[in-house]
Structures are given as C-alpha cells and as structure tokens.
Length: 628
Image (cartoon, rainbow, N blue to C red; front, top):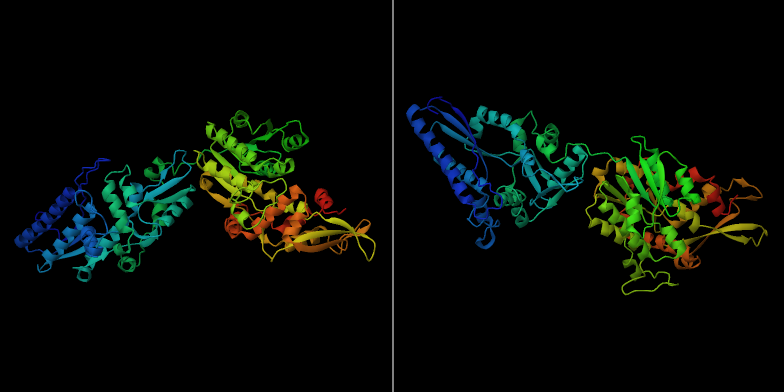
C-alpha cells in the first residue's frame, strides 16, 4: 500500500479449508479464524499506512455472510438453525469473511479519508465447474446435481466475470456506495431449473438430486461438511440477495444469468471430464422383442423409416418360417434378421441380443389373451429379457413398453370372473400389472431405460366395435349394429400403434436425453361415443353407397351400460373391455399421458379422425366392421 500509493483497492481472500476427503477431525474453525485474522491484519495495516501518507483510499472487500451469527440470531429457543460441525464451525469459509467485514465496517466508520464497501457474493456459477458439477451414473446415461439446497428453493446466483463491471462502478460512485453492503445477484433460480438448463444445452438427461444436509456432508468431496452447511444456508430465504440493486449498478449492462453463463462455458474441460460435452455413441443396431406383434411391427417400420441413420434390426419370433415372420423380414431383407427366441429361456433372449446396441421390449398382450396364458407368465418372460439385456456387453439402451398397475381398480370394478381366481385386495393379475411389475423390475437393474406407456389404440376399436348383424324390422334388410358403452361421457386416451415406431426411433436417436424417463403417449382423449361416431362416419359415411347396401344407413349405434357391454363379449374381448373401463375411470392414467409430450416426440402422430381417414379403405378393418 505504501509503495504503490494505491487509492482504489479490491480485496479478496480464500479460506484455507482442510481438503482431505473424509477427515472427521478436520479443524474448519481454525481455518476460519486464520482467514479472519488475515483480513483484520490487512485493515489494521491500512490504518497504519493512512496515518503515514494521509492518502484517501476506498476499499471494496469481497465478503460473504457471517452465517454463524445469522444462524444463532434466527434460531428457535436459542438453538442455531444450522447445526455446527464437531469443531463448532458454521460455514467456516463464509463466517470468517463475514466476521471480518463486520470488523472492518466498524473500524473505518470514523476514519476520515478511508471508506469501505462490502461486496457480498451469492452462490457463484463457477461452482458448477467444481463440486456442483453434474456427475454421471455408471453408464453415463443420466447426470445428477446433488446438493442440499432444498427441493423448490430459489438460490441467488452470480457470474464472477460480472465483478469487473460491478467493482469498477463501486469505485466510480464510491460516494454512493461507501459504508454499504451490496448483496449482488443476477437471478434467483431453483436447482431444477439449473438441471434443465444443463439438459437443454448438452442434450443429456440431467436431474437435480436433493440431498439432506447429513447426506451431502457424507459425500466424497473436499470440505463436505462446510459445503453442506453452505448449501443449506443458500437454500433458505434468509440468505436472499438483491437482484434489482445489482441490475441498477450494472445498468445499462445486464447481469449474466445462469443459462448465458453455461453457454459461454459449455466447452469447459470440467464438463468434458464428466462426459457432458461428449457426443453419445450412436445406437445403430436394435433387437425388437416380439417382432411380429402389433407394437413390434410398428417399431420395426419406425426404425426402417428413420432417415438419420441406418438401423440394423433383429426381430424375434417363435417361428422364423411363419407367415408373420416372413412378412416382417420382407419389409427390408437386407436390414432385418428374424431370430427365434423363447422368452421362457434367458439364453435364447441373450442370443437374440447378439451385437445389439439397443432393445425394444413389449409384452404381447394379444397373444396372451388369445391363448389364455396367465399374466404372470408374461411378467416372467419380460424379466428374462431384462436379465438378458443387463447381462449384454453391447446393449446401451432399452425402450420398454409398459402399462399402469390395476390392482387398485379391482376394488372399484369387478374384473371378469370366468376362469379367474380372485385374490385378496383385488383381481387376478392383469396384463397391466404384468407390464408394470416387469418395468419396476427393470428399474432395479443397471440398465439405461426409457419407459413408454401406450394408451388404447384405434386398432383395438376394430375389435371392440365389431358390429352384430341384425334384420331391420321395418325394411327386412340386414343391418349392422355397433354397441357402445354408455358411461358418463368419460374419456379414454388413444393413439395409433403405427405412431409408436417413430416415437421409439426418436428415443433411440437421442437415448441419453430420454434415459430414465417415462413417456405416456397419447394424441387425444375421446369418449366411446365419440370414437364410435368417428369410426362409423369415417368408414361408412351416410352418403357413401356400398355394393348392395347403403353403408351408413346399414350401420346403427346402440348404447348399453358398460358392464353389459363388456359381458356381451367373449373372454378375449372382455379383457379389452376392461382396459377401456379402467382407462376411462382412472385420472392417474390420464395424468401420466401427455398430448404435448407425445407431439414433441412424434410431431406427425395422428388423431383418431386422421387415423380413420388414412385407413378407411383398409380391407381388414372394413371387414371387421361388416363393411364391403
């Protein structure tokens, strides 16, 4: 100070915290006291130099909160709201600076020619290059920001690069800011928003993992105890800073918000070290389990149609010489290999995954319903496939088509009882439960998975609305009567199974973005009456003349109670009826399916009326509806 004759002084110190990981005996209080003593020594020296040269000086001291004092002041019944560590310290790297700032303000308040501005900083963006950097799981499919800021708490943040503008302004306008404590902040933001910003920029699955203070203190990071106390403090409203004052000081510049800081630092080595900035290895080969099922065929077609990459496909079947298997392979013989697999045998499931980088799994409900196989059988088969995927050395991601649990619905609606054995607490295990339980099993494995939930699809309507042939009493002509359930205009979600394929292809293309996510697919919600009207009008409009009869005039709709509607169907159709009954009465199901999310994943997905328009001339569907 004496040699330079400096009159504008910026002071910043760093706490020499013990950094040995897991050192339970670390003395953080000693580190705090030493930093406090060093700062006090500086200001004492400032007084001495001023006495010698008489120069007017202004100091901007980069300080932090005296958290220990704040904690004791605001604690209930005299107890601090932040528990001290074993050595008695509370956020040692904050409290030492805060104590010293209080000392300096008091010391200089009556010293003519010396002035001080405290610049109290919040959580700095640069912490995300260090202890707060998102860390990946073992497979580098999901990254977590783990800290104890609380769940919905807003945290004040600031970019250290803006100090250049702040400090220069404080020096230029020292008359205004002298003796003040400027609590800067660019914005108040939740850690969920921070994780979302990481996810949006890097295209990875980044989440916020809220820890307790105790959990964070046990992390393998340097000075875990003080860092946990710090996050607890910063997540509390009592740590609030002044965003508006910061904007006023920096005007006409604007403080750098987190998203902008992240963009400017996206090429940082710290992010590259944790795998955020590296592009994921693309998935180019996929095994489709159940390759001849409705969902399996849709996925095969979706992968073939993808223009971004050339997928090689292994589609499983029980018989490679079957008509269905040959039809699937004929879609593209060069890229599709049909593989025999017995889902009761883990070894054949593993063989089906030979060199596959991705896998699609759906329990074939239709086959099980037709053959009368117990749902638990299909649950075990799905688990065998999950086990094979986990054991594979090549599979990087699995897309699992699943459903919701329906045991609770059995307490409200009775399931079909023919051939069923009821159990305590609900109905016999359903296909819904089989899928949900198998998906829950997959979540316990070291697998990168995306779970998709299909709603009812229009292809089902062709079976559910299969008309009965009757003779019109007035004209004597044969008519077709479509019976629909009369059920309080409740709505059920629907989407064509054809749109599942493009959705799965898009997931595989960006699998790290969707890893761990559950996506409830749906393009719209319709009542059974609306669905029947759309289908009958689309396939048999009243003005359409068919050979030998007027199609629209020959198709009538009859409304009956839901229970009678289901009971009038055969065993297989009763199961489908129960699906509609369940989906139309369960708000939890509707909330898990999102039209917006579906259209974001598959912009081309069709509403029911669009699907009908595209399929109105389909001979198979027309035959099911009794039309020519």
